[in-house]
Image 1 (cartoon, rainbow, N blue to C red):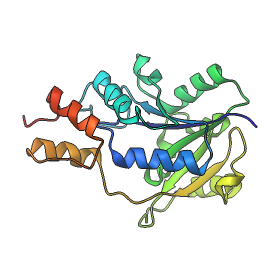
Image 2: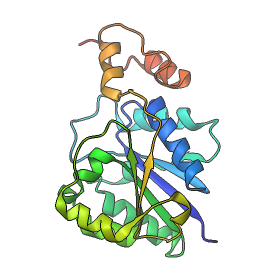
Image 3: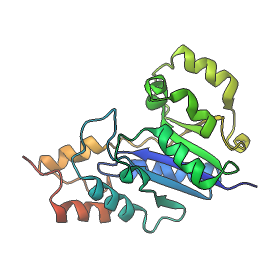
Length: 213
C-alpha cells in the first residue's frame, strides 16, 4: 500500500486546539502515515498575520512536539512569493513521487470558495481533497463544485484509496475556537488558556504577541 500523507495548511496565527483536534481526527480516520501542518507565509486571501512567519512556525512546532503522526512542514515559509496551494502540491509531488497518496484538508467554507483559488482545477490532479464539515454548516456549494462532487466523492473514508482525485467528506468534532478570538482575548488582557496548547500560550506570553496596541 502506498504511503498516505495529509496536508493541512493555514495561517496558524496562532495554532490552537481546533486545528489540532481536526488534524488528529483526519490522521485517524484516513489511516495516514503522517499529517503535515503547513504554515502559510504570505496568504493571498487573508490579512497580514499578527505574528511573523518564524513565530508562527515555532508555535506550530511546539504544538505538535508530543503528537505522534503530526509534523510541521515549512516549505511555504521558504517560498518568496504568495502561498498558492497548487504550488505546494506540485512541490510535494516532485519530492515524494506519484505513488504517494496526498490528502489536502480544507474546511467546508474554504471548499465552497475553491473556484476562486489559483489554478484550482488542477488541485485534484495532484491530491485528493478532504472536506471537514460540521453539523451546523449551512453554506451551499456552487453548482460547479456540486458537479465535481457528483463524480469524485467517496462515501466512506475507507474508500479513499487513490493517490489523488477523490473528494472525501468528514464530519469533525465541533469546537468553536478561532485564532481571531484568541488574539482578541489577548488584546483585551483576557486569558485564552485551554483554547490552545500550554506550550503555545507560553510562547505567546514570552514573546509578547497579540498585545494591546
